[in-house]
Image (tube, rainbow, N blue to C red; front, side):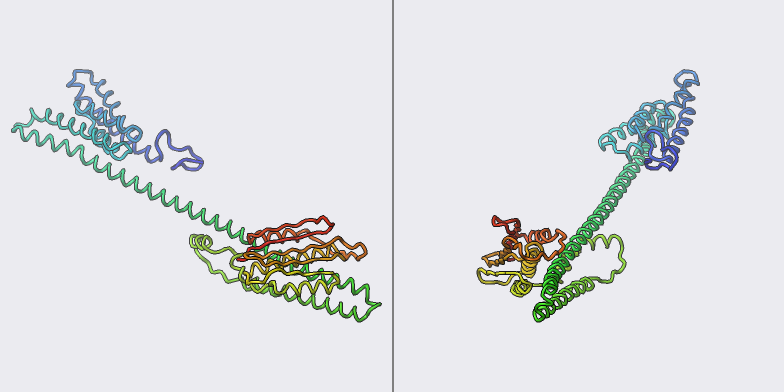
Length: 427
């Protein structure tokens, strides 16, 4: 990574300079100031009675200090004040005051050094013009004061203006960078939220598909096995089982078509938007699962549990249903989840406990509804239907129940059976 002002493939500016242009400007000003001070050093050497070479060398060193104005502006101004009696360093004093005022030095230090420069310039001008101007004392004082103010006040005011403008631009740049980072963060969060919503919706759809297909197809397989066993012995019962298989297949297809129709209806045309507007819209938009949640409000309810249990009885399962309490109006998500839990539990009984007695309990309580599906030990004489299991049934039930803030428990019983229990809040 290169610093500000660097060119790729080249080294950055040396020392304290930020840009190469700053190096050129400061070195150029330092050279001009050095030449000026060296020229003025000739007269200073004559007045001080020292060799001219010493005066020139002293002027070169004094003028060259202007190159340090960005790094040590206070030192440059102090040098200008120190050489003021020698009548040298005009450019050094003016540019040094400007650099000092535009820097980050505290205002009290700027005011102190500017006052010292003003006083030094006034004294030097007064002493040098007092013997040259044949006029009254007031004219000498006025002329000295005018020159001192002209050489001190304008560079200080201009430096203060440039420093304030630079700080304002830096503040605006920082705000712009902060807003850009914030928009980028919002866009990243919106993308993460959209990805999370897509994952949640895929899980939800997979769970719905599993509940619909697994239960219906499991019953179809059970009826098909019974149909195969009794086709030759009891044609009437075989015909009844064949009709039930057809009904189950049509119900499964109907529910699948409804779900696919919901997915197609959820698709909307997307118009192009600007990235910033897209980030804000994604950040404010509800997740996909929330947008589609209302599409499943017309799903199964608790009133259909009798039909569900009847289908399992028709498949040859010994099912008993017990209801405690009086039913109430529950939220659609609660009724659908309760139905799916019972449905999946009955499907597992068909798969893993053929011939076992099953008890379905439904309890309506004050602020919750509870359901339990318990099967006894498997009848060894019953034919194993050979239904495949993906191992996701209990996981899906747990996700549904916990997603609504309920409690889910499943596991084997002391009598050798299996029990699935769930409690859902009524709201």
